[in-house]
Length: 146
Ligand SMILES: [Mg+2]
Image 1 (cartoon, rainbow, N blue to C red):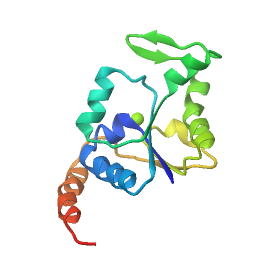
Image 2 (cartoon, rainbow, N blue to C red; image 1 turned 180 degrees about the horizontal axis):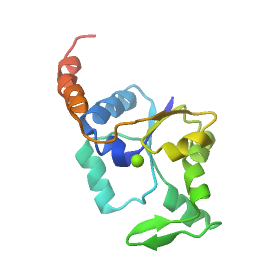
Image 3 (cartoon, rainbow, N blue to C red; image 1 turned 90 degrees about the vertical axis):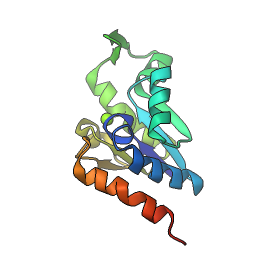
Image 4 (spheres, rainbow, N blue to C red; image 1 turned 180 degrees about the vertical axis):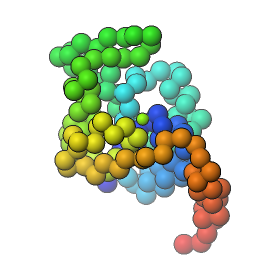
């Protein structure tokens, strides 16, 4: 099965939790799609490596539209900008095209565009004691016999 994960506010923020989840999914033969607005760069690659996220596919909204060339992507202070409506629906279109069954993202603006994909809105994108506790529990379960 195919799963999608946002980077910023999700896998880059709760690294231990998402490293465990994505690693388990990839080990079990599933596809893990990292789905983000940003283009791949040495900095982003380092972020993903530091987060320990395992993935099989990478999708960038900005790169997709630059490659497709139908809508202009501008760069402002190093960040991509384009028509907001088109930008906001692109993750859902990618998930529909690729047959991704579930995505976890922290941006509520994308939610209304998903129809065939379960869109899980992670409401707490910040590090918090709750997330830290969850991360601290992970090693215990990793060592449990099947
Ligand atoms: Mg995000």
